[in-house]
Length: 274
Image (cartoon, rainbow, N blue to C red; front, side, top):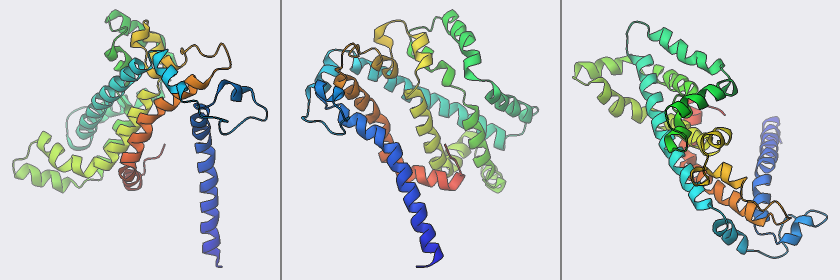
């Protein structure tokens, strides 16, 4: 057995170990969603239920507004991702292909906002949304996620790798900026855009603090806020709570499953990590 094969086995073993560590909490929470009440106080702790309690899922839906919470999260995550990616693509295209006075200054100004911690802007953002009358609205929830400097930077860097000869040839053929963006640039950047879109969707879907602040009525709560308010924690009956958590993870898991090949292509072609 040569050194290279030993190295490959070592990398595989480490990757498998890290994968198991990451997957274990998801696996246990899914198993816990079927626990009867007695399994939560058992010692040693159980990994699988003694009997499958299907009623946990029925109670999670019937005894709370979980479906409404999921609709709110789905609308805000999908809508916020579409607007966010549209803004990021247009801004990155302008920074990469257009020439105008102050372009680099504006780009650096946008990037400088990455240095501002989100918690420092929390109160001011809340007051702004309140003055605009956007409390308890879907747009109020997604309002602070519409500008993404990190995604603008990543897209701009990828657009810069596209030869400017394409732009010149398109201009000679009478192709305008919008057509050049949609017909030439976007097909080339599709894997990167999908990776960033999934990142945006996951981030907005999992947001907790901001939706908690700008929603005052239970009907407008997002799912991350709603799960903490299910009210089953007064006893050891955590089954419905874990059932709700398992339901909450379904959209993100499905999005990853259907886009996994494109995600790998996007990561390997652009170097996007995290």
